[in-house]
Image 1 (cartoon, rainbow, N blue to C red):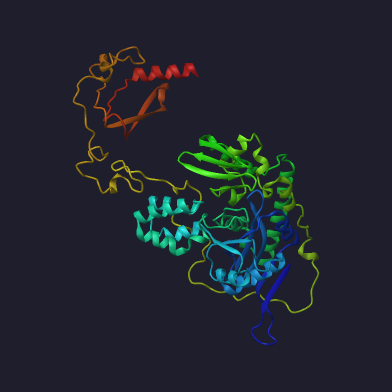
Image 2 (image 1 turned 135 degrees about the vertical axis):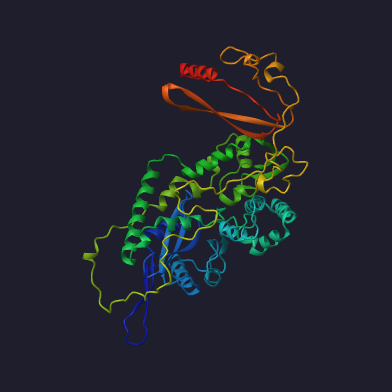
Length: 518
């Protein structure tokens, strides 16, 4: 289905392009036949001097991968453009009120109201990652970040309330702002189980935006042709890859099922009869009903893949867990998604001419300053992608051993109780005896004891302080010599301080032994 909207400045004026909807029949049928009833919406900017935005509707196939349904070029992201897109899309898919379907978005302008007007019965989820990006601006820190994602991924209400109590004890303001967003829209505890998807992020829609990144820098006709060719090749490749796969379950689902199987080591099964079981996992208990394919932890209910509790019960019955995987993830149903293909087309020089007035391009909106090519990213993301990102790096203080800061900014720095800090000088032992002497004299690799090295034997320190670890790095120099560089890093464990001396003959002898063994 295709739809073009143009406007006229006044009666008799030539039409000016405003919007264009693009949806292929093969994609529409592929979504209805093989995808789960969940659709993600997102918008991205076009990178030409004419501006505009591209709105997309992306589904999720049986292998948890991107499946594009339709897209539209609009003048901007607002209620009118989203309402227009949703009306054409749902009419194309045959969706009336939205019963049994889930929609997920990034809190775009006007989209939430447009969804309520067009499909009031549909479940509308918000992307948890975008919510956290806004929430963390007021509530930074590794502890609050951990609590946020724990609350999002809780599948039962008791665990969710416990996590929220911990968040409230840490920061009452953060707790209030978390609840103000609306937990029913992005927390797994409150999402429906009908569509067999526990997704609370809109990553696949952003994947599509990155997938067509180069095409977005071209004019509209060339851009749409590039998108069509890219999806035509993708449909072919996905179909051929699955035909070569003889497994009855899709690859990513097989991987998830294998991970769940590895977590059954702590599960103890108690049968109750009629395919019902009680499973004890450490200090928690869950009820599994294999006949209804449900578990009280709700993980199996949400995604349709047996959880570790269900797998332990299936193994107790000596049955195959593959039989209990939802039909959404089977190989045969996956092939229905990519059964049809996008038809190839001839070049623009062979396209038929149509009667009517030529549609003019939209007016150019000149913005002040130099045009930007790079997208505005979050502060925790790498801007260029050409260097190793530090996102997700957790800093631990060696004074108070708390996450989120280092010893330089520690509030306990200089406190009398922080004598084990790396800022202070390491405390040397009062025992004059060497470490080797305390053990009866240790022998080096050159055959001499450490006490015979010209009085430079290693000293022993008190136990209960900080230990030291050292790494050996070999550097080649002139005359085939080897120099051993010793790097020492302090760590809090059993020994307060350790001094050692390694002579050059020991180094060379050690290197000779390594080469002989290799």
